[in-house]
Image (cartoon, rainbow, N blue to C red; front, side, top):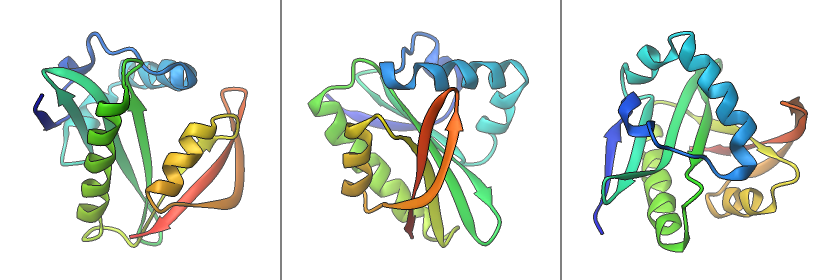
Length: 147
């Protein structure tokens, strides 16, 4: 199975179903898409899609922040398993390497009740910060790393 990374296109997610722990965030993302965010996502390199065998397993994007930083976001498919996670981890690591030329640091919110996501953040070299926020009735802690 060959992994391919593409610049985001709305057609990449026509049949995409996010993992359960991201279903609320996915609904919020769909609301943003109704407001025209797809045009922003398709401009530049800010959002990419990982596909294996023509199926989307991961969508990763970032938004520039002040002080040479970025806010990263990511959605996994509900069918992402071990093999797909290996590809997704390599994909995100490679993207973080590329982002070094654009930003000094990156952060992302992670649900406090999602231990798998926290383990993955540590694997990617992120550290938990003190910054917490309630989003969609769930508590999140921001994780950050220097690039």
